[in-house]
Amino acid sequence: MTPTTKIHSKKELVLFGASGDLAREKLYPALFDLFLRDEGIKVTGCGRTRFTDAEFQTLVSREVAAKRPKADQAQIQAFASSFRYIPSDYSVEGMRALAEVLKKTPERSLFFYLAIPSEYEIIALLMEGLVGNQLLGETSCLALEKPFGFDFSSAKKLNTLLAKHLSEAQIYRLDHYLAKDMVRDLLALRFANPIFEPIWNSRFIHDIRISIFEKEGIRKRGQYYERSGAIRDMLQNHALQLLAFTVMDQPQSLKPESIHQEKIKVFRKLRLFGNEKLGNIRIGQYEGYRKEPFVAEDSLVETKASLRLEIDTPKWRGIPITIETGKKMPERSTDIIVTFKKPEHSLWEASGCSLAENRIRINVQPKNDIRLRLNSEFSTEKKCALPTDLRFGFSDNEELFKEPYDNALHDFFAHDQGTFLNAEEVLMSWKLTDSILGIIRPVRAQLLKKY
Ligand code: BG6
Image (cartoon, rainbow, N blue to C red):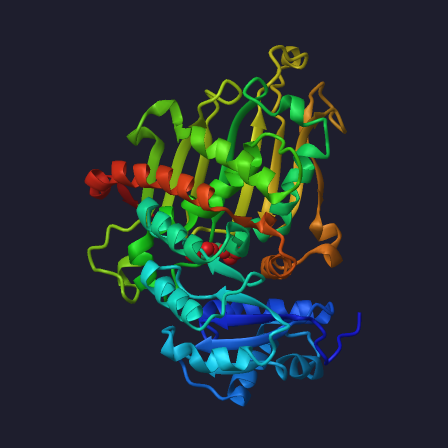
C-alpha cells in the first residue's frame, strides 16, 4: 500500500515520555510501520524536555531511520512531518497548553500512551493533569507500560486510581510479550488444532519449561534494575503470561474478557511445585553486574531466576512448570517447551534403542517457529526410531511477521484489549510474585549464585 502524507484518521495519539528510550526505540518505528500500512494517526509528543516541533520531528526521523535502515527517506520525512510537540510537566498547570491545542479538534478521539514508568506518584500526578484539564472523555483510552506497580499493594493502588477516572475498557495495560507473533499464535496452535487438546494435561505431558534468555546485560538501566531484579522485571509479567497462555483452558470465545477469565483461573491455582519452597527457586547474578552504573557494590539483586511451579488442579497437579529468565546468557532465545511422557512400552527397546520424548518447542524469538519432535525410522540402518523435527513458523512467511509494538499499537487504536492485561490478572500475578520474593528475602545472600 502506498503511504499517504495526509492522515485521515480521527484518532490522535498523545504520547507522554516522548523523548524517552521506549518511545525512541519502539514506538516511533512501530508508528512508522503503521503509517506505511496506511494506519497512520496524528501524534502529539509530550514531555519535560523542551523541543520545538521541528526538533521533535528531527528526533523522530533520526530514530526511525536508525531502526528501519531500508526505509525510504522521503517516507520517513512525510511520516515525521505530522508530529508536534508540547512541553509539559504532568501537573494541571503544566498540561494547560496541551489541553488548549487538543481542544481545537474535539472530533478526534484521544489515545494517551504513557511511555513512562507506571509508578504511582507519577501516574497520579499525570491523571490529575488530565482530569484537571477535562482531557479524559468517554472515548479516550489510556495505555500504560509494565512494570504495572512494584508489588500487589502498589498495583492495587494504581488500579483504584485509574478506575476513579476511566472504565476498565478504557485502560490498556501492555505486556509487549503478548504482542509477539508467536505468542498471538499460541491460541490457534492449541485450540484451532483439536489434535492437541486431548493430550494437553498431566496424563500425557511430562513437564513444561518457559525460558526467556537475553544476551545483553542491564545496559544503562541500573537505577531501575536495582529496584526490580529479574523476578519483577521478567517473571512477574512476561513469563507468567506465557505460562497462562500455554496451560489455560479453551476460552468461551476470542473476546478479551473470555481470555482474561481463563488466565485468571490459572493464576489462582499457581503455586510452587509440590508446595515446597526453597528447592524450587534459583537466583543468580552475572559477573560484572556490580560494576554496572548505578548498581551497588554489594548488590544482591538477581539477574537470572528460575521458579518451578505447578497448577493445583486435577488436570495439572504433579506436572512441573519451570519459568526462567536471565541476562548475559550465551544466546538470546525465548522458548516454550512442552515435553510429553514416553510410551509405557517401546517396541524399539528390543534393539537397544530408547525413544526420545515427543516435544513441542515454540520459539517465540529469535526464530519465530514451532518444532514438533517426532520419532521416525527415516534413514536408520538399525531398527531405531530416532527424533526428527517437524518445523513451521513465521520465518517461512516473513511478510506476515510484525514487530510486537506494531501489533500492540494496532490493537490499541482498534480498541482491542486482547494484547493487554486486565486489573485482576495483574494483581494475581503480583500476589504470587510477592510470596516468592518473601521466601527469598531472608536467604537472598545464600541463594544468589554468580554466573
Ligand atoms: C522488558 C524488560 O520488559 O523486556 C527488559 O524490562 C527486557 O529488561 C525486555 O530486556 C525484553 O524484551 P524483548 O522483546 O527484547 O525480549
